[in-house]
Image 1 (cartoon, rainbow, N blue to C red):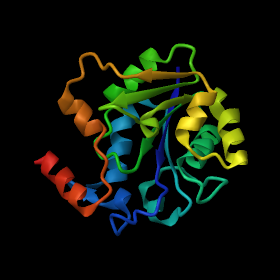
Image 2: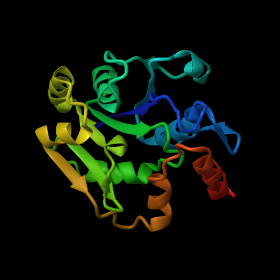
Image 3: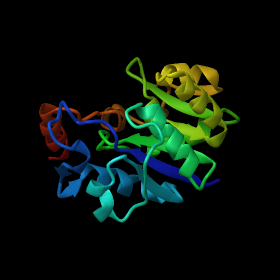
Image 4: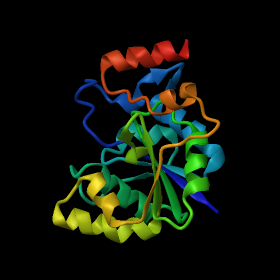
Length: 194
């Protein structure tokens, strides 16, 4: 069963003050780190970004969404439209330590559902989820109605929530769900690598 990986590189990075996806960690940009970590489990890896120029040198396909400024739901729509596989895993560009082991668990647990979404430390993480193309009509319906909340969309489809991660310790999970949105978090990410 093929899987496509879509890295969402939208957002204004306003809290960081610069494009967070291109910040370097151990000599590689965050977006390259994410792509490299997911390549082995995916048939393809592509970027969703409305400003394509910063990513052209990465040599990865880049797709724009059809609803600029409408947030991650618009990014998911573009990912589901452009993916060559029936299954699409999402990774936000502020997840420098995205771990394929988490996505493999989602894949194992998906069953017949339209989506598998992790819940960790009491929070749902839809931007670290796995989605079938069957979810596309619900995404488009929400966008048409201006209902941009991921949670609202997930309530319209058959969603498997995964809160138990057997064999994955907190070291892997804390890193996977680490978000890097501020200069302080960027410094924290650098410390994680040392």
